[in-house]
Image 1 (cartoon, one colour):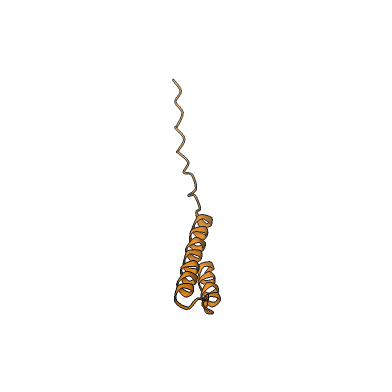
Image 2 (cartoon, rainbow, N blue to C red):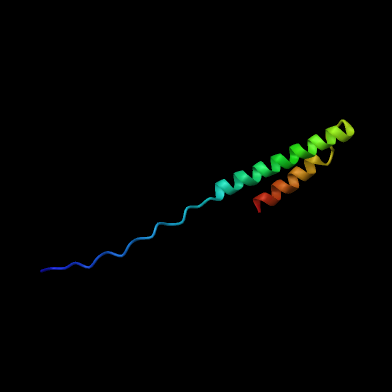
Length: 64
């Protein structure tokens, strides 16, 4: 009787979820920006001027 050695199971590479992580972070930034705009409109009847700066800072931190 001839016997053959069973092959070792090959492990699948881990699934990379970097794109999903980036999308979730960008959604969080959009939620933060809309909350800041809503609060500014309710308090002062205008969108805060610092909103663009905060969006750029949080966006650049998301890419790091």
